[in-house]
Amino acid sequence: MSRVHVIGCGLAGLSAAVRLAAAGLKPLLYEQSGHAGGRCRSYRDPALECLLDNGNHLLLSANREVLAYLDLLDARRGLRENLPARFPFVDLADTRRWALNLESGRLKGALGICKALPGVRPRDLSALLRFLFVREGAVVTDLVSSNHALYRPLIEPLTLAVMNGPPEAVSASLLARVLRQTLFKGAAACRPLLPAEGLGPALVEPALAFLAQRNIQPLYHHRLKDIGLSAGGVDHLEFAAGRSDLKPGEAVVLAIPPWGCDALQERFLPQVETKAIVNLHYRLPKSVDHKTLEPFLGVLGGRIQWIFRRGDVVSVTISDGERWMADAPETLAQMLWPEVAAALQLGEIDTPPFRVIKERRATPLQSPAAAGRRRASRTAFSNLFIAGDWCDTGYPATIESAVLSGRLAAAAILSR
Image (cartoon, rainbow, N blue to C red):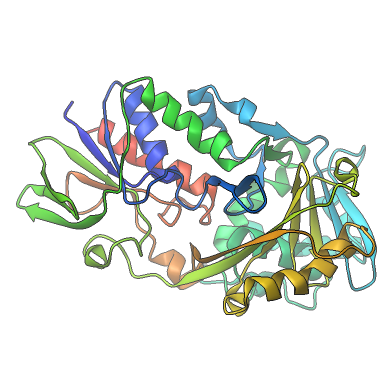
């Protein structure tokens, strides 16, 4: 089979490339930056002197596409399974703490989840059944309103984490797919998987090593400017450094976000609105026994939403983060540290060294209208395929969706 050109070395592009390589092809990879991983990567921070992820991601044992990808790479060891399937929370408004422990005896599936939530009565459970039958165009609050008992302790934090948007604005259908694959299946599908060292070592470096073993190296600093077409489909790629002509039978996987190249929008990539996420990383002082802290913690009643701990670094996530994009890093770090300290019960500690990472385009907007405009792997051109977490995979824009989209693009090419 002829060569395949994969544009973009994020997880979607890497997923497509390793599937193609496993089938005996030797894809050409192009990446406009100097590193692979896209919006899911790690880097060594010079100020904190440690490895940081550019964003926080919680994977679950239900993420079958990610696990299959890692199995292909023989790299499951990069993820640490946290047992039991337990999700601790704290409410800063009243200091109440609780945990959804899905593996505690009689507590099973959705029933167990609701029994563990404060203020939730058995009759409130019926609201979850609405996610089994979602009408087209519905937002999450059409199914569970903001005054429902399930909304504050479960639906709102889950929606923000998965959809990066408020429940009143995002697609209920996309969230329902996640619920059916995770919470509704109980503990076996909900065991947390956290990167042992970081997202890069867990998800990116194994793919690069797999490709390198087959003499496939990404071409970094290759920025795509345009795609040339003829009657037969794509016939050349226009990079900032020059033109690359395709030979007959060659194919292209366009694995860049819709905002990745202005010239390609509308013809090949949709116009999308985007949503921001703010991440803050704090390096704890040596006086804190970090080993006693939870590996992750959901937070209600504050501005922060999730805290993740790896070693002596705690990382904070604020989804739907547009309101914080204009604030100076110092302002954000100082303002949010008291919430972090309260959530972790650290007492009075001065703000430790920090790093603030703002992802202005962390995900696409995932409204019902936007979800309806998502595109499939195959395009109108016989040798052009697309991949990305924003594609029509049936899942929200997540790591699972990115990896799945790459596999689907590779499968479409291999089936030609």
